[in-house]
Length: 288
Image (cartoon, rainbow, N blue to C red):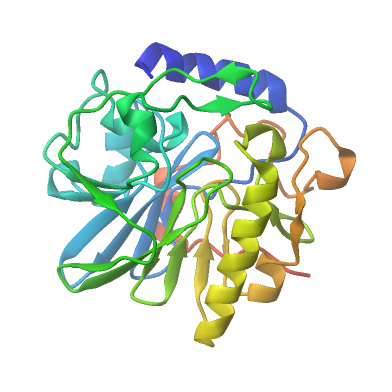
């Protein structure tokens, strides 16, 4: 996926989803003292900081304003040495592509061993019910391949890996310090609760629904408050809201799934400003 492909996706997706009120990205800013995020059009990338170590979760589009917006959060790209990738879609790995600005050229990339097959070319990513193949992503960073259930440390940060296939064959979510779950494209938050992510972009929707059921069971068994942080529709700590419609698919061209709080065209970023990034915490999705 080259820079030109990322720009093409911006244009095509803007036309396709304009007025559908589907994507509801957080603006650039902070959720709390541990989690910050950057908005890149309709996608969010996240930074998790603890005891002087910052890890990055997903790498967004091949996006020209990433360094600028990280500066709003006082995060220097050169300090990022560890990047967790939920899945290899172009809006989650773009800053690692060989024709990007290579802001993170020295960072180690952590990715599921199944998901890595997209990067090696063993598997091609397909969307729109298998009718369209996405361009292959190429990166040169050192990689660490992860397995379902694996637990490891980066500094004082505990990371647990949970495999949730469906959107992609090897999609992984990450639970940090037992409190923050970064879900990538596993859950879509609508106005009335969480659904399985956008149907037209999944490899296997039935598998995605089963994965979401398993994920809910895993989280409820822990019996503690967890912030569920999505790639495109904000965050919540209300498990009932997050999994309310987990057996249903988000169908973006159906009126039922329109969210009045979502922007008409999420690819317009006029309301994403340095002033708001520095001075306002990012609230959770409203559940009423």
